[in-house]
Amino acid sequence: MLNIKKFLANLPHRPGTYQMLGEKDEVLYVGKAKNLKKRLASYFTAQQKDPKTLLLLRHVRNIDITVTHSENEAVILEFNLIKKHHPRYNVLLRDDKSYPYIVITQEHPFPRIDIYRGARKKHGQYFGPYPNATAARETLHLLQKIFRLRTCTDSFYAARSRPCLHYQIGRCSGPCTEMISQQAYQENVHHAVLFLRGKSDEVIKALQKRMEGASISHHYELAAHFRDQIARLRQIQERQYVDVGKGEADVIALMVQAGVACIQLLSIRGGRVLGSRSYFPRLPTSCQPQEILQAFITQHYLLPTQVDNIPKEIILNITFAEQSWLSNVLSEQAKHQVKFVHPLRGERKKWLEIASSSAKQSLIARIHQQSNLTERFLALQKALDLPEMPYRLECFDISHSMGEATVASCVVLDHQGAVKNDYRRFNITDITPGSDTAAMQQVVYRRFKRLQKESARLPDIILIDGGPTQVAAAQHALDELAIQGVLLIGVAKGVARKPGQETLHIPGRPPLKLSPDSPALHLIQQIRDEAHRFAITGHRQRRAKARQQSRLDNIPGIGEKRRRELLRYFGGIQGVTHASLEELLKVPGINHSIAERLFASLHDEDELA
Image (cartoon, rainbow, N blue to C red; front, side):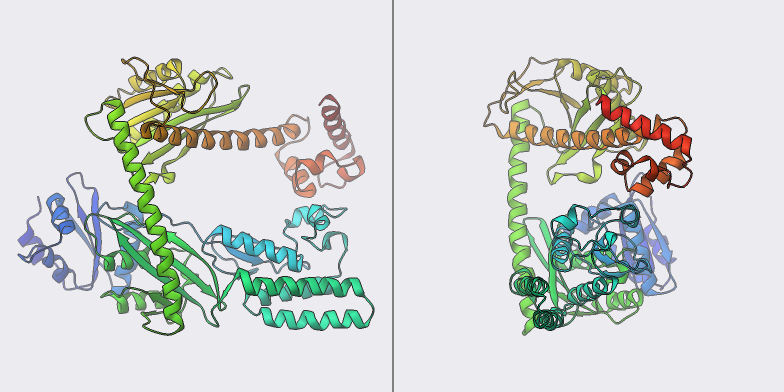
């Protein structure tokens, strides 16, 4: 047990971080301080504290401190420790995925355009970040329609002998088969870049000049093409984007209600609102809005994939005490001045109202969803006659095609909804093909052996998509691991596989049927259907990969290197299948005998099929 007086007496008046540890040395809370001695002493004074702090202190058994060279280093270290340990008393931002960009490559004479995630590389122009993949895809599709830039990979481009489907439907100008000159294509690239930088008026003026020139030269089809481009750009200006003038900023609005927080992030780049995104961080008990907002800003902008995207201005609907400190940290990381703004009037106030309104609507929808979930969990407790309301459910399903490419899924649901970070897929091997019982036993054993090894929390209820035989297989796996206290339920579909006719099989109990309108049954159907979706998606991916690879793997003389060269040269297995003998001979490493064997094998397979 920590000796508080002795501990505080030896603390330095220096910046740093502190980790509050529990009985098993688990990290309960991570904090930062400009002055460690003053900050930690404040926890143990007689001054009245909020419920979260009181609850935290009851469980603290030790405190680790790390002294840093500067206050800014303390913020960075706090962020890394929170990301590593996910302490239960910190505000946690669940989604740390990188943001999508639109990238235009530069190393090729006919640059390609695509969506990109991850660290930005040197070769390419990046536009964004977009708040979500949907916004990025919509913009990419618009650019394809208007400027007809290619999206194919360089290997696919190099292997083309005729235009692809994108050319046929007007989404590409066909540079791979010289349907457009390099100069004309580069002009399209230049206009796309201007458009992505928010300079669509310049693009329209340039297209108007080209349209007039084509008309004067009696190239009426070309003039009509420019006219259509201008019309589409006008429509985008009017409908697809909210024009906010000039500048780049992020607008962040926080709304809290009924213990749920919603943070709405509005991204403004090149004077346009690219889109918005809602975040629902995990909150400890009795958390203040200022703490939530500060935690979000730290965890969002200090991600390695986000540091290069920090805007010069961050507009907030709530102020907090450590704004200047965080401003210095973000400025240091971004290598430009970053300031927080809380506008009371003007254009920025309107942006903030848009974000606040969106946050409010998202929060209402989230609370409604969670209240429905809570009702369903309560109904499940009552239907199964459980002493306590279950909190965490896990459901398993098996998917295969006549025993081929068997994949098992595990999905997780709690009172907050689907816990997608805990979803898992398992490739099932070493069983009799098509044996669902053997597959179920294997997946349950592998899943819970891993949970035991990691000392992770076990679910309250395990749901199995199947009847008594699948339940018995799962129970056998749990018995092997000596796992007790977890309720196992099999969900068997009715004779016609009609929703509402399911029968529940629980070891030691008679079969149970719930009313079709029962909220408890709806909860079971919800997680069962999600497990089925997750399993069948994984099965299809594994089956497609296996089938594509096996057509080449089973041909004598085609090893890993030659298969890679073939797929790279032709852009995929379909290109290899349709290649002539002469085209196969052009691939590096393919001599005449191998080409003949490859051609004969692939065409024999086609005839048999």
